[in-house]
Length: 181
Image (cartoon, rainbow, N blue to C red; front, top):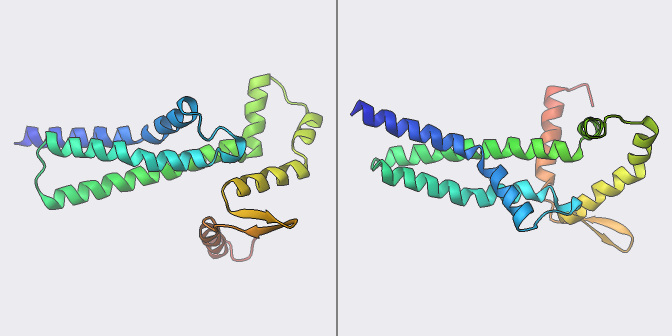
């Protein structure tokens, strides 16, 4: 019995470790093989879609784990599923932000460019990162995500899915740094 419980735990840990690869693998399939989310304005949707689609293989692996090890206790099934889902969603959250940082953070892009090209010329960087281009790119991304829409020369609120998260971040920033920006 103790050896069997060790096997159950070890395979569950393996399942958790596999869940680290799922968002990356799904996004690679969506982008490389299916050609989705390749446009710059839609790239940020890729990790979110990969996370949602990744719930299917994760659920399948969890079900296989349940069947192979004949897990019968309702409490064990619930808490194992709850734990695995929580870990997966946290992994996906981190994955999204690492991906987002690589897509949008100027510092990361400058480092990647200097590594790729062997040098970075300041005048070229200034040209590549003009304020107009930065604003245009952000507006383009918000439009692609449906967060804003252009009507009669004005940008209007769209779906507003990102607004609650933005409000939460600003609230937490004020709590942590009450006197700062």
